[in-house]
Image 1 (tube, rainbow, N blue to C red):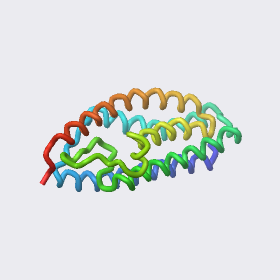
Image 2 (cartoon, rainbow, N blue to C red):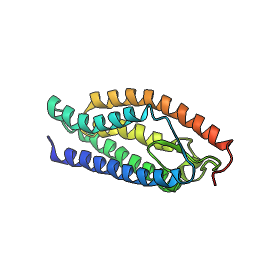
Image 3 (cartoon, rainbow, N blue to C red):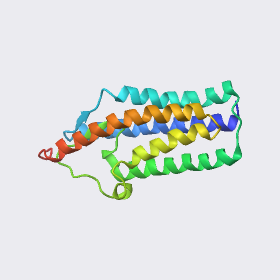
Image 4 (cartoon, helix red, strand yellow):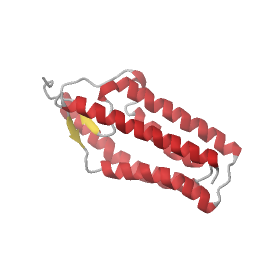
Length: 176
């Protein structure tokens, strides 16, 4: 197992743990303001898929002997870094309203600043890019294809649920 790639996977894993810390803190804040959590049925599948990505990447590299191809690996690493930047831009823009779950505070307007000025769901773009690029940093193409396909299915469910929650919350009176 190439140590540099393993370090990259561990860094992405640490970033995911940081996300969970932020999400839990934000969830407490949101619930105190009357937030509604929806889409709980797909959330465990998302956690499993993202955990699986971090496990499958080094496993495929080790078991299939995937070499590092600089012409592919370096651009994919740049995309992984860009995806992290976009993700944390989303986190910073949403502030306490950002979460890994679908959490909506009734009556609050949609956020339209930051990356949301350009895309409706920029965090999901970051997830899609990272999920394809992270495995390809070291040639784990099977993991990249599998994650991308499974993530596409989950994103259809997630975005439909999130849009429904946002529509419902927008028509509700503001929480006290």
